[in-house]
Amino acid sequence: MATWVVGVVVLLLLASVGTIWWAVHAWWWDVKYRVKSRRRRLPPGSMGWPLLGESLHLVFRLHSSSSSIKPAPFFDQRQARFGPIFKSHLFGEPVVVLTSSSINTFVLQKEGVLFKSAYPASFVGMMGKFSLMTAHGPVHARLRRQIMRIIGSASLPHYVSEIEENILARLSTWENAPSIFLHKEACMMSFDLVVKRLIGLSTKDDKVQLMMQHFNNFIVALISLPINIPGTSFNVGLKEANTFAIGFPYYLSMIMVVGLCLATCTQDQLIYPIVSTSLSII
Image (cartoon, rainbow, N blue to C red; front, top):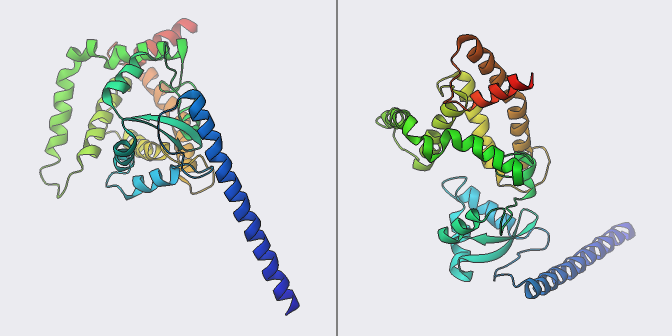
């Protein structure tokens, strides 16, 4: 009986200490960011819970939405309350969210001049430091030039017919489908075109189909809490990223060999400048 009473007392003490710590931490969190808001003139908004911020609310919206990558209700509610520019705390980082297309256009146009883009730890951890979206300065400029040579507006006239064929082929699959998710279909159309333009492979290829499955899992995991525990979305995303890191060089090497041997590697594919650069280095 005495042992049972002692156990209950210990549990109550631990619960009390935990509650006090949480309350003090919450108070400090609120004071800390209120002070920073005054000093840095941050926009209105909410930082959410201590440590967690508003991440759980966003993740809940992601999973409850009809599309797993459409968190619109989360941002719509805050836009109605705080306006098109508001602060928040997502995935372990304080952030300022912009929901206005004109403001986002201005920020993107001034990238590297007035603004420097940054992404949550989960995003950078899976995309890598030298991807197009996370790189900065000369590295970003070089990657962007290579990509825009292939899929930019200047090269659009060269593959309008491919876009038309791609859309017609995708539309033909809708005829007998009981239901259609337009957002998913639009993503698939883009994936089909990009794979064909960048590496010259058809999405009917079995290896590309497997790559597409990894790609879908990877995109969903990009917006997740940066907790690397087996079974979490972040852990799944890291595994998919490793799959790409191991598998894509194989596809790239295969296309390079076939392209050089059969002279099928044309300047319409991104792999052409990669092959040329590799040969010049050798």
